[in-house]
Length: 121
Image (cartoon, rainbow, N blue to C red; front, side, top):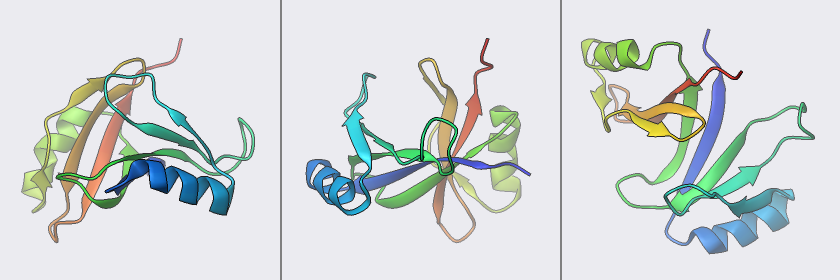
């Protein structure tokens, strides 16, 4: 069984979303220091507390809420997507210091992400 590890909320105005979610749920939202404009949302109750963290990002091809699932072998999952009636929406890309990530859709077109995390040493 593979767990959900991350969520993304794609918005037309991520900064307005930052105000909304931080005031409504007391999420701590900050700029990601990576290559794209991405607002990290810290939702856990402490470092080991319940919940998953996520992000707010600019809507484009993706819109709405997308959940990311941790996988052991991203390449194998990508190959299996079409066999099961789904569709690969992006090629795997490296998220620096985190892992390999891609987007896919189930047979009904619902998008989701998959992440093969780098082993922590």
